[in-house]
View 1 (tube, one colour):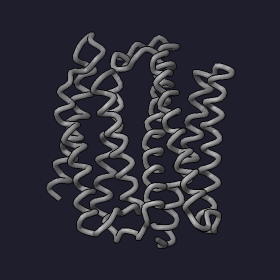
View 2: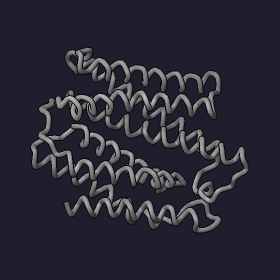
View 3: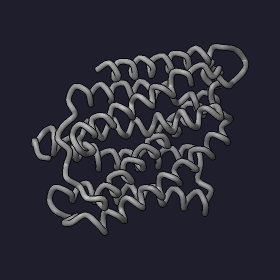
Length: 263
């Protein structure tokens, strides 16, 4: 419990320092003090899962554990990218979300791990990495929408200083989607190769929604390359595709594990 509390406190401190950095002055890059809290928070977050895996003899990938692991991936990406640029502003949202996920895992998680061979573990880890990366892309899309809306209305809020220029933010969005799309493709491919009864009753909704999300992200990247999609079109496609992916994984897990009580 001590490690969990320290990690949560460090996440909260990092988010607070980022908020304070937005008001620091004309420099659009917030001071790097937040890193001194974010880095150990991420390490302790990972340590919480590592100790649980060691105690239970394997990785727990149930609902709360998976949610915490996805936010761990998100905080890792946010911290790594934010350390070298102005995307640290993502931490204002990502770090509090990680606090809630870590708290949920501590209170309701820590179930007995499922017996998975290395092939199914590979599929699961690729899926978690894809969800974390594409969740960052969804947040970037929301930030792009907020920035575009504020600029169109000539509302020059202080938080705009914490964001890169519109074109740069849009470029980062599509780069993140491209990486997430590759990871999602690999997750779906390993699922086809290694998961038995992929279209069984308890997996069919997850499979169909995941494929629909994959198609949506793929069409978005194709539309960007062929027709130069950007702005509101890119934002809508990103959020719709991410909503399908959330329903595919966490929606299915929520119903199966928390509503129906199945593993």
